[in-house]
Image 1 (cartoon, rainbow, N blue to C red):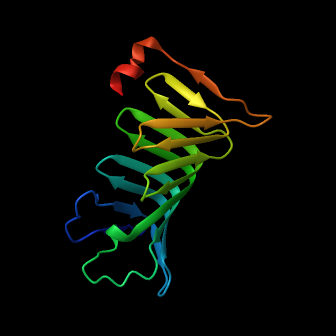
Image 2 (image 1 turned 30 degrees about the vertical axis):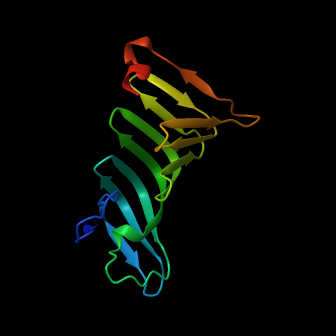
Length: 160
C-alpha cells in the first residue's frame, strides 16, 4: 500500500487554512484543475477532518498569480463513499459531501445523511451546513422526512 501526502508548503494568507491529505493513491493530470485522492482518504484542516473513500480537490482554474500557492486556490472539495466529517463535537455521516471554500458551505447527501452532536442528531435527504453563519438546513423528500432527536444532556444551544 502506497501512502501519499500533500499539503501547502507556504504560509497561509489571512483567513486561509492549510489542508493536509493522506491517501493510498493520488491521481493528478497536467492542465486540469482537479486532483483525486482514493483509498482510505483523510483530509485535515485545523477546524475539521474528513474521511472518505475518495476526495477530489478542485482548484480555481487560470490563476496565474505566482505568489499564490495551491492551497489558496482550492475552490471545492468533493468527498464520496463512507464520508465522515468531524468538527469539534459535531459529526456528520453521508454518502457524498461537497464543500465550497469561498462560502464555507458543506452539503451532505446520499441515502441517509446524518448530523450529530453527542447523542442528539438530525437526518434528512440533504443537509447543508453554513459554517460561517453557524446555520444548518435539513431538507426532506416525499419518502424521506426530516427526523431530529435532541437530548438535553448534550446542551447543544449552550455550545453554539
